[in-house]
Image (cartoon, rainbow, N blue to C red; front, top):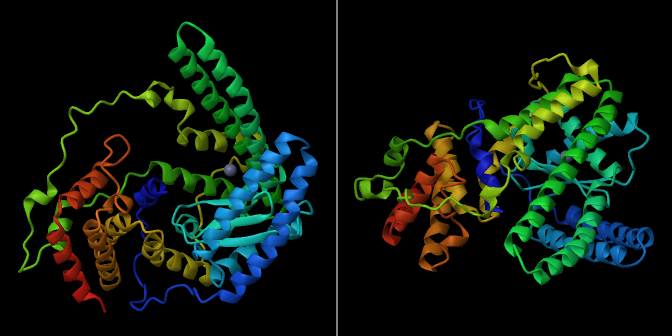
Amino acid sequence: MMKKYIFVMLFCISFINGFSQEYRPVDTADYAQRKAFVDRYKIISDNYSKTLKAKYPGTTGKELAKNYSEFQESFRKEIKNRDYVFNSGFTEMLRICFEKLKTKNQNIPDDIRILVAKDNAPNAFCIQDGVFVVNMGLFNWIDNEEQLISILGHELGHKLLSHSENWQKKLIETEQNSKTQVSEIYSSKINKSEKAFKLYKNQIYESGIFRRKNESAADSIGYVMYRNTGLKKSEYINSLRNLQKFDTISPTVVKVETYHRLFSSAEHPFKEKWLKMEDFSAYDYSNFKERLNKDSLSTHPEVVERISLLKKNFPEISQDEVSVKSENKDFLALKKTARFEILPNFYHSEDYGLGIYTAMQFLQDGEEESYYKNWLGKNFAKIYEARKNYNLNRYLDRVDPKNQSESYRQFLNFMWNLSLDDIKNIADLYAQKSP
Ligand SMILES: [Zn+2]
């Protein structure tokens, strides 16, 4: 869960000025709406389970329904845990955007329910049962409503083509299939590990190909639906370009000065040893995954490929046009809210380490000092509790030289170098500054 958030911080959005000092968080007093959704969802999911069993008789249907019910269980837990907001401008904006698609496309089902997740990862997905989940973090990445509609179109494309259902079905079949192959490998006399590796590799390649095909199919059907709305065509591709930025922009580096500035006080001066980096020069990089062809696994070339495929299939969008920033005040207000909610969202998912790192990035840029200092204090208080209870691992990543930027590794080293007393002092320093 934590790893994906690291990439959320790769971007440092440039609209900084003009925020209100007094930010009112999104309304979580949404009991009535939440209950209404849960009640309605019970009916939707029962129907979908029945459909699955009828559509795929035998083991596959039963397995599919079983997986789906497990998924629903965790989904219901998330709803109970308030991982979704039911009473926000996000839902209304999404409903308006969805309607724009729906009125021009008869193939879009009526019974779509849109949920907004308190999640900073720029993501959206449409569950096969008709529930559409859009992460709040998506609003940090898109420039206008057209791009939002584009993304809705793409995700609806997945649903209309039953991609997640087909994927589940394939997984079940692959599992049955690989059980047979694995037992064959183990009964063979020679090259067991080579054979096992080959099987594993083929499965990853296959899933990669399957995913790429699905992405490009969803792009096409999504684009056709988007085109029917008559909106500016190039924004469909621009929504993908923004996704590409998310893959490639280097992280905002937290400078050494920022550590000094934020973590020294007259009583407790900064200690240079806090910045000491763990030595990974002797780290053994060779592991199982390293042996796989990287190109087939990485996601970034996919976006480039998807854009060029779209241009090829639909020459009318080949003309590049820069993304136009929305002037709709409701949309802009939501972008501001999404940005202000980054810290509350991390706090909600108990990603306290990431919360501190992100707050440091905002503070380095001089954004909303008192707001982010307050969050810095709240997160440090949690880190202090965790450290005291010997469960800091749950809230703070370990240093992983292969998958983290140098800046993030420096941060983790700093955090792990702090003593319990150091953490307490910093937490107290910011607790006093809280409004
Ligand atoms: Zn997709």
